[in-house]
Amino acid sequence: MDINEKMIQDLAGQMGFQGKTAKVAEKFKDKNEDELVDEILNLKKAMKSNPKQFEKQMSAVKSLSSMMNSEQKEKLNKIISMLEKE
Image (tube, rainbow, N blue to C red; front, side, top):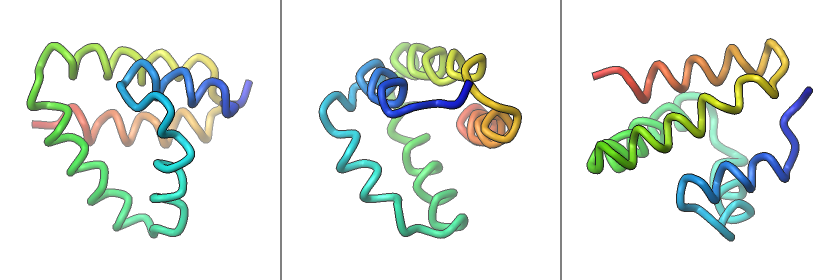
């Protein structure tokens, strides 16, 4: 099963981005891979500032894996590794 817009909105709501998914998607739409990595590292700093919230957010992200195809899972696992790396 591929991820659809509703799943993304549900995840965004769980992570505190409710109602902002279109803006967030637009912000990242034209970025290359290096720019996206930089954005992920910036997000990591913000997320890790609250350890309890970070764990909740990571749990929500990881729960998406079961709904993804193999290519999506591979990309998600790379992102999770980047976020969890010290």
